Image 1 (cartoon, one colour):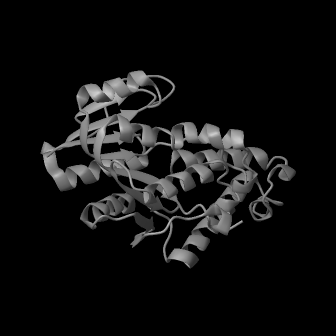
Image 2 (cartoon, one colour):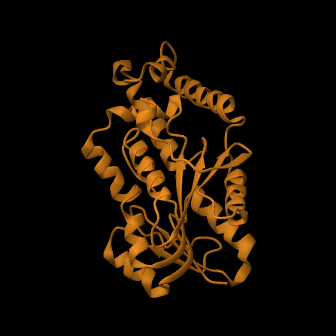
Length: 266
């Protein structure tokens, strides 16, 4: 049934992508899953035929991927790394470039290096009030992904845009906010700072998350988003006719055609 490449296969989104591929294409799908961390623990990604450890920006990792296959039905690019915990508007160009190194730059590189029919990327609702105040340089990387999704290229392009769910990025934001909350003046966004005033850092984080959930429910109708919702969004992507953006927030899933532009919300 063809080859499927998942970059970031050990994460929440990568897991959802693998599960959806198996559900739609069955055991005949040949899934090559990549992951990267501080050390190679010998992890074998569940439901993948082949697990490749390595930094996808490293030529050795690309060669390892090519050794498995060069023709793919789908690539799911489910990995990202960048400075968060500060307002998007305050991210420096150096921080944005650093975030793009893993969060965006490898996507067009892989498109050119491999023969991929459809590339699926991932984004968030980074122009909501809470994301604008805390998503930092990652906001610009996600905007780059959304703009790229709208361009024509060697592969078809689609993007799954998700609401709040527990991930490495969300954990990073919470960790940095808890650290910053020890000195409130370090939290630059007034809305985010208000959640931590006169309360413990744990309660501040709880109030911050509640604020995101309330905003998403008001804007989109549901929140938070669970693993099964992300899985369903992938199924809807497979069933849609040449989708651009598959939005998922809570159990609500809908299609749109336009990117989110940061400049329209600052």
